[in-house]
Length: 188
Image (cartoon, rainbow, N blue to C red; front, side, top):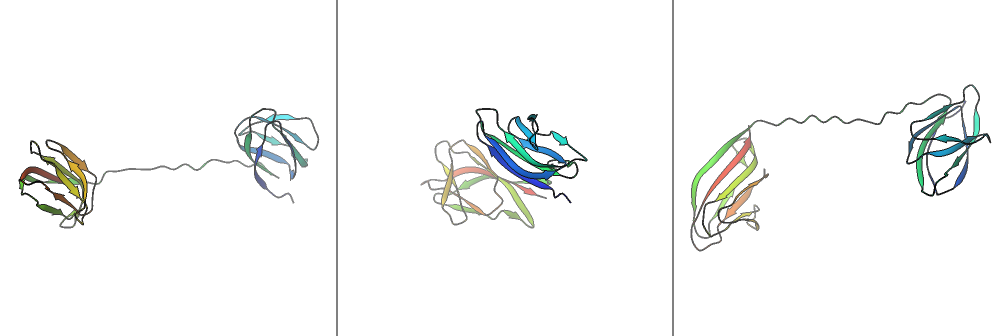
């Protein structure tokens, strides 16, 4: 019985590598470049990724790999009693967008030093995005984490959208009120 052998090897520039491998079929599943190969002391033949040498019904017992180039070659091969066919795995990703709805605040007058909390949920629906528009002509507002730590400024006249489903806060660190509009997009 001939076992199936699978190996990965690296051939240095101009290296000749003999290897004791028994088989009737040799298949190169991956190779970074073309290389030369000899079976049981026969002459060298070219080999590259995806090529197979079928010697059935005769078996070979030794393979000699040769790198004829000045560049290192990496390769993977299979040897055994029958042909092996390899297909790399294919991942198919299907992406669909969940239904969403919007909820706006209208124009808010956020008082000096005020902090507004946003939970990230509307009843049983989770927020997908929060949109903050700073209507002030000079003062900045800050998006904060749930603990109230300043994270990102929303400068005067700016509108920013954050992909944020968790709790957050909006802070006015100024000495005067700031007008703003806050919108939330939630999953239905």
